[in-house]
Length: 193
Length: 212
Image (cartoon, rainbow over all chains, first blue to last red; front, side, top):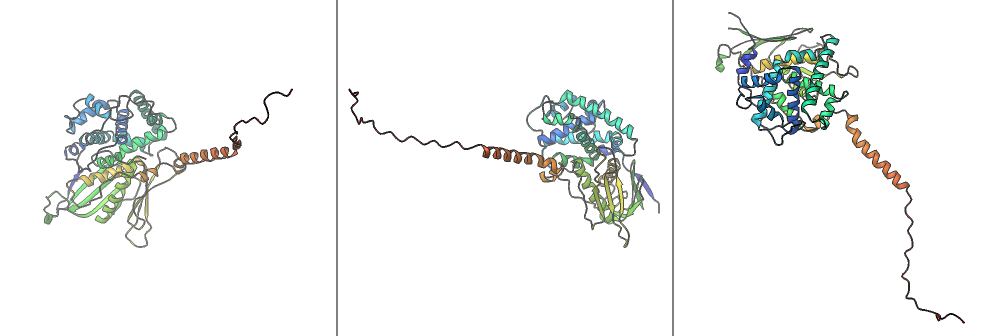
């Protein structure tokens, strides 16, 4: 009797497979806020994140929804913390596409997320990595979000900010990949505290 | 023909052995009957078991990870069950990376102490990704169904906020009310002034002419 050993499908193959069934619902404003903050964290981790998102969107088959950076930016502006905030709600297809995009980007950046969260890395190196991430995220937050909003002030607060930024990175790590879609979507639909 | 599939992450490796269930119409590359599984976790002993153990592992670790995405780590799994997952609370350490999650496995063998494994966030994320790969692999059809992830309710999220912080605002409000009431009580009530009686019509009782 011959044994057959086959390894797990690669990430490229995973992208082509259909997404798992999803619960039907729209995201609240709070959910959109957190979704955009996580996308902002992706940009803080990846200097070329904006372009990479458009490329990833076309790879995932969302080329018609997000053909360019402007269309992607317009959807992200439904985040109430944005300087150029848009009113209204996004359709479920649009939020699902954004979450899928976020999961795929988190999968791509998973090695970096893992380094940030690992206790086996040297402490000094980990601190440097966090410092770099925080600096970049703070810059992006100052540039794009409304500094008068309480949520933005909390994010930039030296006491409160690091905890919130760590929660964003944790959310990205545990929501990475196709398997993270349902977890992330359910989390973004949490009731308001 | 025996099939064996592997799922690998940096600190976690899962191997699934089994056979196609031809009676269920599975193809030759689909594992429908599990003959065994083995999981290597960096720095921990190798885990192995049967289908039920694998199902219990999936049904515990993945819901725990779901709560972590919402930053509400809470224990998952009954103490009588085969697998439990719980956060390790630490008063010091703050935001530093540390083993913050404990997986407790109860052996089906009698008189065996439960095995406790602790993970940091990165190791747990590796484990979760391994289990996700298995769950979503169309070549493994073991019927390991899990309840769908659901949004957390308001009271479940409130646990995320420390009790002291949660009660601070109402306590401050009550204190402010009590102080205002106390000060109010100390202020003397304004003395009621007697209302002047309606003065009778002025009727001269004596001649108005001045006395001579």
